[in-house]
Amino acid sequence: QIVHSIPGLEQATMLSPAYSIEYDYILPTQLRPSLETRLLPGLYLAGQINGSTGYEEAAAQGLMAGINAAQAARDKPPLILGRGEAYIGVLVDDLLKGVTEPYRMFTSRAEYRLLLRSDNADLRLTRRAHKVGCVEAERMAALEEREANLKLGESLLRQEKHSPPVWKAAGCKV
Image (cartoon, rainbow, N blue to C red):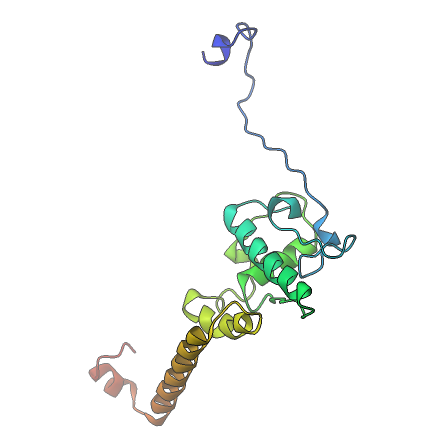
């Protein structure tokens, strides 16, 4: 009925309702891991133009492209995150291999997904972020305190050797 209410479509027949979005994008294989274009040095791209779709994907690429543009402007090396370091590393690596449809970052694409957790992201990435100027000294001090506490806790646990019934009696799930 909605289609028929449009002037000129009073006699139209809908064969199959559909949804379509057209994407124009560069070949992401023409990008460097820094998201700088190979053909036009100094141009960094992020988001849908790189062949991806989704707000999170665009934000992740924008973060990396912006950091790397700033690094280049200061004659510093780019920040490249690997597949085993961050989901952003998986996203960029997958894009650089080429896409045949708009790319979404699914956790299942990451072979190290058991290591790429939110509870250890600071341990994996804060030092790298500090090196490129994205983390201030106060945040680094908090990281160093957390690392020291984790090391101490691990040391204390290694000294404790008990049988499973003793751990269970202490309230631990065994």
